[in-house]
Length: 375
Image 1 (tube, one colour):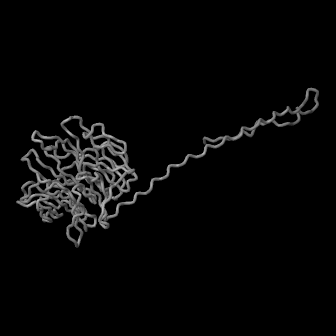
Image 2 (image 1 turned 45 degrees about the vertical axis):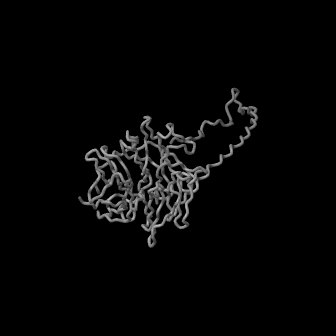
Image 3 (image 1 turned 120 degrees about the vertical axis):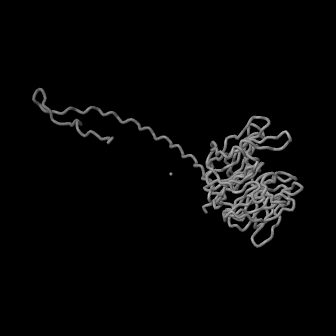
């Protein structure tokens, strides 16, 4: 199979001048000429004084222009563990520090990832919690999609509720991703439930998107109905999408599929067992390299768990071997000089590990609650 899958808006009014009577001579009965005496003119009425004009209303001041986030900064979320304040955060790699993204002083109670828009002015996420006075009708059974400006000055609800009423199931919306033009935001959606063994399972997966200019209904893109959708990413440069499917009914296989256009047939890039890779059960995650067009993925190969890179030409290289920790989502800066890894340790703590060109990997956070970076 050829793995070179990338490429690389008269009616006129007039006065009647004739027929106006003139005072002039006429023939009297006795043959005398005379004039008709003028009648007493009606005195002019007092003109109505002009009413006081209504003062113009104060125009709504234009919203301040949103300044994009610098290319040296990225967003991530904290899950509230170990006393950390849950919410969306902005990390400044130059200062080496992070600050929460607040909207009118309110933290964003995210339970999943947040994604930065291509113009770096907006952050998109899905919530099952109350935010800005909007609360889902079904607590923890519904999600609402939002976008917030990176300065926290503007917040807009994009979706109606994504809900399911069965008590044993939860409707989820994860893995936010922006279209390359920033006009739509995508999420992987489906039903989540607990198996009899207590394991979390997903069913009826699909990808849904919302326009980013107003509250609206979702567009739905059908994915493989015989598989669970584990992860999903969109390349903001060329618009192509990667989907990680797991537990497919045919052979219970796992696979990574590339879609040039969502809703159309995709191309399988890597399947379970191919090249010795195991893609399921190890928290495999996908991340685009938007500079060079390849992608990162965490998987098991043989006895090694590691972060790998799938290049445009189909070659796969090993980047970093795990020593027991799990590498989740990673994010590469648009210039390709920085890579941020979301790492889950053997003790369950989650922190961010960063690499900059010419330096070694170093820990960026140490609170045990930081994950899902997005450049």
